[in-house]
Image 1 (cartoon, rainbow, N blue to C red):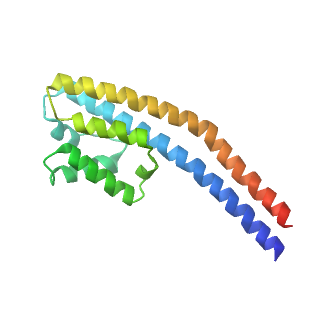
Image 2 (image 1 turned 180 degrees about the vertical axis):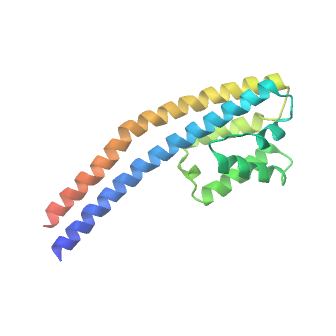
Length: 170
């Protein structure tokens, strides 16, 4: 019986550590996907005079596909792009698609991007979008550094603590 308890304790601690490491990886990937897609949107804005809403619907290929398609669906329900963004984020967070892993800083930058998008001249939109993209890339870089440090730490700590508890139980 003690062997079984020791085994399950070790596995539980290891799984906990690996899940924490995976959460860091998910945030990093998602920020990278969004940065790539926003860069693609900026490039579309450079070469097209189409309204931003049309550019969003024609954004392909995109790496955060579920986000952009859900945003596109929600745009038709709301007059404001920012309202559609808020609804999209709420839906994606509730569906546990990885968006719940974003930190408050990440959400503030995205919120600012969608509050400015579609307002003002095309040149101002591009300038604002480039500034937001720069901030998003900085957040991605910070997330990648946290992933490299914390990911290894969490997974190692989970495995080692699981083994330590197993030894104590035995």
